[in-house]
Amino acid sequence: MCHFITAVLPSKAPHAELDIIARKHGRQFLPLSNPSIERQLRSDQKYFLTTVGHCDCGTALGFECRKERNATNWAAEEQRLSKRGWSKAKVARALAQKREGAAGSGAAQEQRTAAEIASWTDLIEESLAADRTSEISLLLHFYGGTLDEDILLQEVEAVSDGSMTAEALRKMREDVLLLFRR
Image (cartoon, rainbow, N blue to C red; front, side):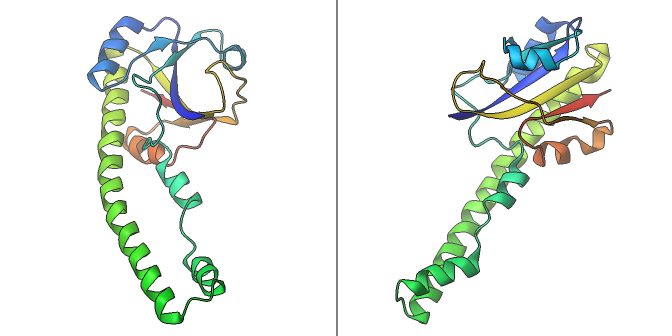
């Protein structure tokens, strides 16, 4: 059960050249077979795995969506601790420690996120430059099993303004094909 980032490229794109670019940015374009995805693609598109390591868990892609979904509800946390019979002072100390820890780890996470988003942005921009390809799409999916499991694409979201690439990557939603065009 892991996140993986996959890509869709035009069939006629120079995949070997694009793979070299991807590897320069810590990624790859390795052909991948997933019948459920391939049925949803245009006939002039091919599907690729970008993951070089074991998985993409903890990726910066979609970080803003996951951050909002996983944000601590401090009021609920306070109620939970109070129901345990903790004094107001003890609850206040515990919450202060948790907030401090979240802020510290948040700053480190933001630094890692910015670096990964910059790497993806560079990969996309370089891939779209110099007529290598007219488009590149990315898909973030949480797999419960194998990479050929059934996936239903929710939609295709086009990002036509290159200045919005980083923002789109941060706000990427799972099972939405994010399309970048030159």
